[in-house]
Amino acid sequence: MKTLAIIGIAAMLLAGCKGYLEEDTTGLLYGPNVLSTQDGLESALTGAYRGLGSQWSYGFLHPSANAATIGSDDVTTHPASNKADWREFDQFNVSTTNQRSGAVYNGCYKAIQGANNVINNYSKTVGTKATIDIIAGEAYFIRGFSYYWLTRFYGSIPLITVGEYSSELLTIKKSTPAQVYELIVADLKKAETMLPNTRREPGRPNAGTAKAFLADVYLTMAGWPLKQTDKYDLAAAKAKEVIDNRATYGFALMPTFAAVFENDPAVAILPESVFQIGGFTGGSGTANATYGNTTMPGEEGGWDDMFAELNFFKNFPEGPRKDATFRTEFGLGATKIPWQQSLTKHPYYKKWYIKGNVVTSSISLPTVMMRYPHVLTIYAEAKARGTGGPDQAAYDALNQVRLRGLPAGAKALSPGDGLTAAQFADAVVQERAWEFACERTRWFDLIRLEKVEDANAAKSPEDLQPIKPISKANYWFPLPYTDTSINPNLNQ
Image (cartoon, rainbow, N blue to C red; front, top):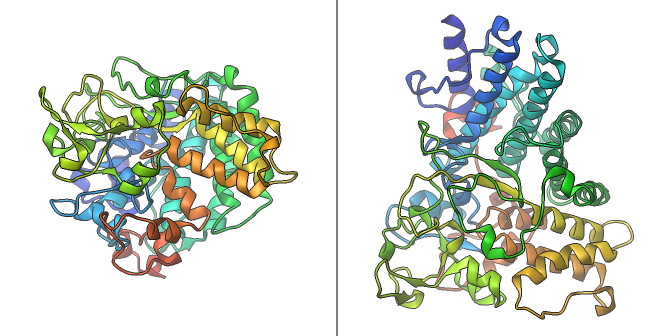
């Protein structure tokens, strides 16, 4: 079992795990003999997926990724209680020992380790070439996806492309965002050519998934910190590929916003899901902990982890989308109280309630990492900011999202309304704020558009406030102490 020990230690050092005995070795039997077989390669891929979702530990099957994005203007947390880790983000005072950002960091590097083992060995694997290529395509996607989350949270990070431990990893230096994005783009380009149009299972990507994330990456690269504005045209073109071939990839806009968030554990996947990470209560550590308790008020047995900021709620356009987004009356019995009389005096997000208002922290629901409306808004904004400005297709894409959320009979936007390209782009960004409230999207929009300071200046005085002036240094989090204490080069 020498190979297992070496790989376990590598995962511990690279991902900041607490100790060897705590290391989850699912899918990590990575000897060269194992990886030469198709089954072994699939096992390594399983290990990569495992990094993306482990309840309470790492990845995205718990609310840590939400906590790390509440420096935006749509979500806040309890001003007291046991929410210190959450408040650090909302008040722009994130420590190197914060467990919330560390959970995403650890999970992504665990996923990268498994993906690297697949990517570095699949060309030598014996088996059915078509299946092996799909396995590799999924690994390329997972690695690109993971590095995308890491560099948006941390900026300059260790860029690791090996799967085995070596002493050189203890002195590795950070790579710049530009270097990281170069790998992300290359990985997603490989994924879109190697993945099939139909995903193997609900929790796996297909070619459309890779294209959608590539469009999002291009949109982000066009903003801060890279400001490669030529990427707007690439983002629009790639998003248009997904839109024009949505039926091929199995993507569709659902007829009502409320239907998107019925949160029925019996439903494996929705048409709007471009990529999701599966949750399963029958497996060890695989249930989803983001739904239920974490976003429910104390009056309903919840934990008051995250809820709506007041001005965001008050400014939210009336209509079916607002009705389906927020919970404004609380109580498990017949008697309900309005949010103004609740303990926190805030509305809560209905999006994370479980069907039947089940009070639990363990449910078989997926974490959806991108919905199809995001692709529509990528196209609309990127076309507006790119060459030639918004076309009719851009207006159509925005209106599909916008009109679904407004009362029946609401007027569609049109080129005849006289909006400039910049005004139209701003309207798309605002629409995305409403559509994806509390879905880990707003924070990244504010960063790439350098609007974090403005958004926080517009907070209600009754919400948590930054404890010091916000600067660009607050756009990224410090690397976890678990890694910087081992490798001083990561402090530079």
